[in-house]
Image (cartoon, rainbow, N blue to C red; front, side, top):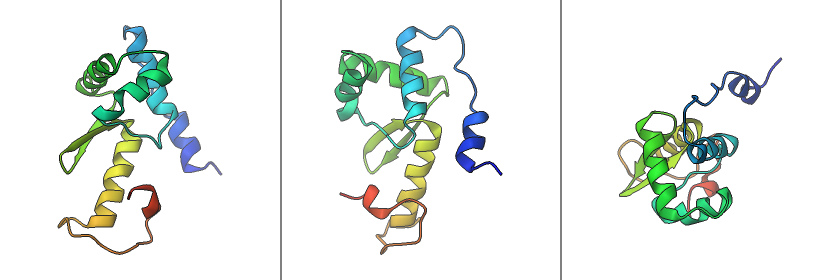
Length: 120
């Protein structure tokens, strides 16, 4: 019987043709690292992982991929985060689980995402 991860990997669409090389690399990186999300303050770090790309360039390409609907973006508080659709969905689920829909903090829960992974 396949695992959820296997089913999701097998159903992952191929990146569209015609993307600039850097956008394709960025998209592949985000999809290969579904446990990572990036805010604007992490753009330089992500650029280093992609091979000496400036933070401003990474920011522009993150916005472009988001506009094309190839990645997702979510705001927690005032900070926007970018990542694969899977990563952002899990980030939002964890935020709801830890804070509740009303925004009030809750205690530890039986969420599939460890609370320690999302709190500082």
